[in-house]
Image (cartoon, rainbow, N blue to C red; front, side, top):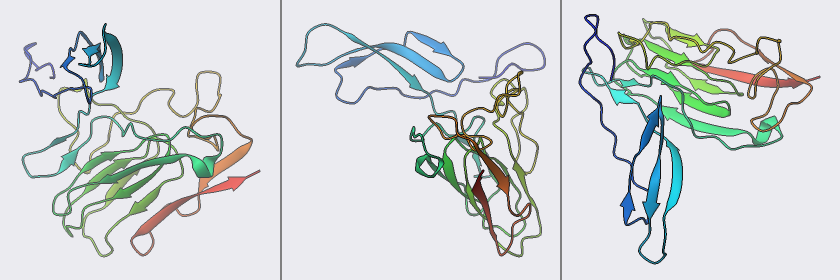
Length: 210
């Protein structure tokens, strides 16, 4: 939920959480998009604990996919090429706000010629597929974002709120998924964009090793 301008709260967006195979699952604590609790299984005694990310993505009134935080699915790897990320596919008819992980994600934006998308990559060597000949631009933001605490949800084509220190920290140390870092280790390499604009409806971020 969000905080309204008058200090009241918006309607809650509920998400069901269940540990697969469990007899009982509880949600005891929530911090931002992280849920923690305990669960039991019928064939074992005692209880176990879990921690999970809650998917906060939602569909707006027009039918577009809105992701206030980036995708959480990626493989930990010590090599950039093996840092597999998420497949993020938005509405094909409406505009979207799509967020990536620190892995190598694949984004598929709107196919609507008059629709706008916002794509914040989150890191990694990403593929972004765009429809050629559209009348509205896609805003591609090269940082991690989080707008869960914003009073007004990010709209397609608008700027997503950046996470401070998501690319380099205060000591200028690159974070995982950025500047040639894999998802599970740092490497001496350099990532850059070969093309800043989409060509033929396809943008590719390549890895260049030093």
